[in-house]
View 1 (cartoon, rainbow, N blue to C red):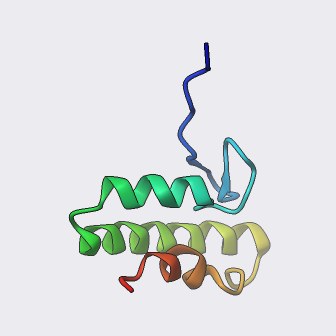
View 2: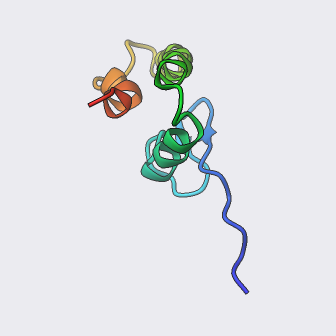
Length: 82
């Protein structure tokens, strides 16, 4: 019997995946988000934009400087309609 899979959610304020430890959104989180928002890409982009703003503020506060480079691409680049 297999164990139920755990959702790949962000660990705030580090913005790493609670399950796999990768930068969030990790690949499994991206796939789950694409499935969840499959009929509304605009809502997905709005949701990710809000999380990007939250992550940017939290990571800036942790680092004492600007958010890490590539944060916009990390949160939004993969979700843009092709």
